[in-house]
Image (cartoon, rainbow, N blue to C red; front, side, top):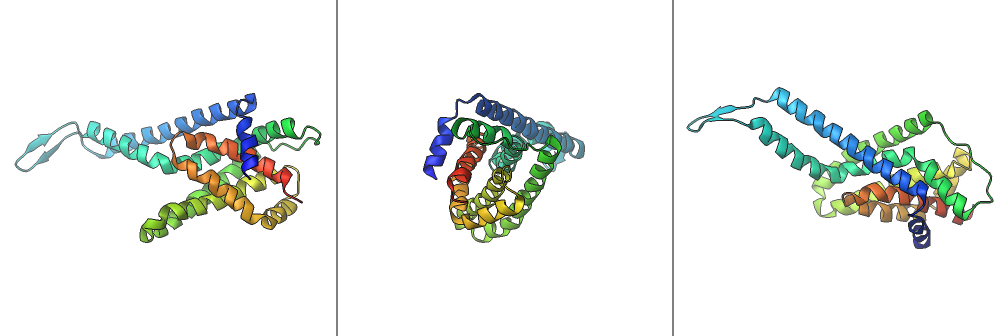
Length: 227
């Protein structure tokens, strides 16, 4: 498992890796900036720019105060939002990363059928919906089991990310049924690899890079595991 990640990390200078990382970072920041912009616009539409308080009088600049406050809130939320955002864009560029790994380490393999952009986007969107829904349900456990919230978060998202990424990598060369069987056969190792990949996602900026190396790691793992 650690050798798989080491091989993925050693390929960081690959042009395909750099392209996916740069695109992922730009798109993630564009999406988060767009969400923040829409949020601030809604706030400005539904709140007055000044209010009158008893014994104090009029207080202006409410929109500016809310904008700065919402920026701080957005920066805090981005720690958690980066997980689904990063996973979404990694899913879109998964084939490029897996191709780069196989071109270097398994050049003898036959070519795979690459999914269309529409097919890839639909699968990534479905996974994003599952990821968000599962974490919303898990909020109950995060609240009532607060001391264990980080462990629950890593275990849950490690399972979801490892399941999705390994399956997507395996389905490049196997039927969906065979890919699912292989994943179940090695579920423990795959889940552990997902947890190790998920923990650094709590770190801003690093969370935009880790999924790329996660996909590369699962590509190495797929070729290493007995089938």
